[in-house]
Image (tube, rainbow, N blue to C red; front, top):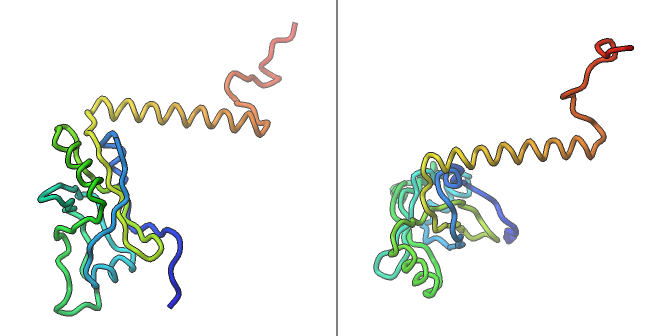
Amino acid sequence: MVKELGKKVIAQNKSARHDYFIEEVYECGLVLTGTEVKSLRAGRASLTDGYAMAKDGEIWVSGIHIPEYNQGSWTNHMPRRDRKLLLHKREIAQIAGVIKQGGLTLIPLTLYFKDGKAKVEIAVAKGKKAHDKRESLKERQANREVDRELSRHATGKSSSKGKRKKSDQDYD
């Protein structure tokens, strides 16, 4: 069997970066059953309602939806069960200490295969208020406009703003 190399993204939590300030990101392994892995290899999963928590010296992720495997039988898994994350002890202690401070939460950002192994990126994050979300949208839009003008300038095309046709120009 050929060993898989590289990174194959299965699911992303796109709303996470909109709803939270990302403080720190960790890459974790997942404890999965056979039908869960087969369902993930088919590219089916959802992270939208996912969150992680620390309990009994371990990190667990909840709310990740991995649908049942189509060809599975009575051995199929529960789609929204709690799954254990694989981290080093010092990382678990660090994450648990940060979360206990309050105001911070653990959220999954990306679910992917890396060199054939299922991995999830979790982030220590702080929730955004509505005005923070508006500010980040304005900032992103301003950056997009600046990039657009810089690329126009680099390609030699000039902006059509402020230019008049020859027929509109005043001749004295």
